Length: 160
Image (cartoon, rainbow, N blue to C red):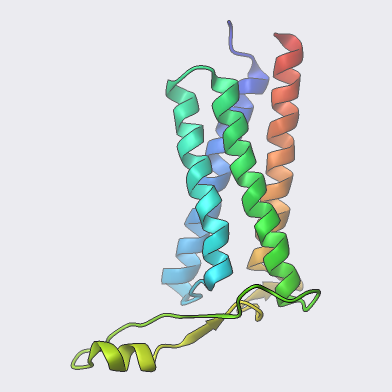
């Protein structure tokens, strides 16, 4: 079976989108001290899975299956992002509200680090741009990208 341009594009997007979004999450975390809450982590896990599936698509057959699984992971992360954004915008209640990030300072005991850890709330957006939170951007980018990937896979299947 020959590889179509639609499949190649879907495969590249399935790898690039979660890689870029995870890179952005880590830059936000370590570069700008925007530490993730629990629901932020929920959004990262499907992207990790999508990366693994997309990489498998470069090495294992059938490529369309692995790319589809990667797109499913991207879509899952986007839908979790929608839920998280809804919690941040007070559209509905979340399942959890905060996460503590213990970081022991020099000369500080582990218990002191836990007791003095900053609380990262899931229902408060630590950063927004044009009124859209990071979770909202994850929803928009991930959902849009997953739909594009699925459409490219549909086009590939029609050509096969």
